[in-house]
Length: 374
Ligand code: TTP
Ligand code: MG
Ligand code: MG
Image 1: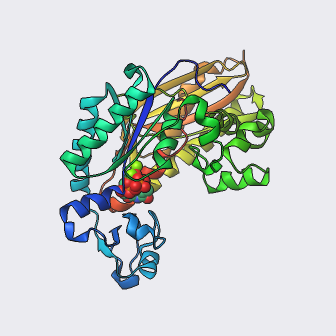
Image 2: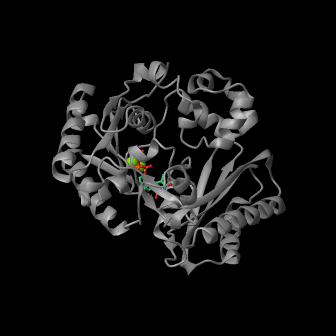
Image 3: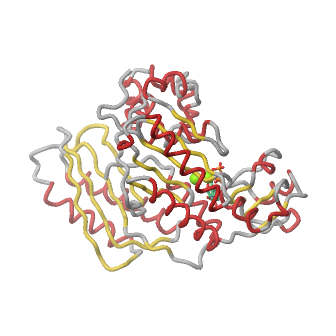
């Protein structure tokens, strides 16, 4: 099975029950008890959600994102704590600094998660020892546990992290993808949510192995370009590099036309529609934006992106007009267009409209979106 052209060794680190673990560290008397961090449960009448909970609370069925009232029903005797975002961010910074001390390249991808490129270690045994040093230092100096996955790329490394959580290091070498990844449910793949998993199930595809064995053109007919990406992922292929800096968050939509398009009215309409969707998500998530990017792919797959940065705004009109203007140079009529996309980036969060817990739940959701190659 093809796994990766250039041999890399990638590590993925994720803190165990992070917010709740930091709370336990502050109040050791909580250890051994179920601990839930999130909105005020108000004896079952509370609104809002669970940010996270420790493993004792998970035994009662409590999970991140669940209504706090439901958590209360499941386990009223748990310790319920409000979100202290500043404290978690401070802990996160110290953890990331430890990772940076040991690994040459570190990309933080969420408050408790980072990828590291350990290719320079040379082999998996040495990478494993490096991971062990990082885990020990986090434990000794921070009194917190983490899990680390090691694999040939980001995708496999992240799957490895989840295999033995908490407080474990797991390696999946390229030739172990079949044995360790294929039996897992398709839901483990980046971008496969409940809805997509349901559609795949209807097609008789339950495991990652089922997906890997499926015909790629059939997947594309059913799921569009996503079908292709899922097939690649199922085969353990993922070429995303580890990038030092956290990609600025962005909101984007793109479509591949059913048939390549050569009609500028149709393109304009589609750009307005995509702008509408991107704009709605930005507003719903309390973001303003500064940069608008247009993506165009021609029928021969030649792909262009063009961006323009404006004064901070939340105007739909400005987004749509900018996207249309950026598209003008491509409307020569010489080549038909296969795909268009609109992206808003340089996002600025409008604080005060949402609680930090809701904000975090949201960033988390976004970060698990399948990355586009914008
Ligand atoms: P995760 O790493 O997803 O979860 P976790 O660290 O709590 O537990 P695990 O041991 O399974 O890794 O998220 C990191 C933190 O982000 C988490 O501690 C709280 C926050 N978060 C939310 O606020 N809302 C959410 O819906 C999720 C998933 C996480
Ligand atoms: Mg975690
Ligand atoms: Mg995480």
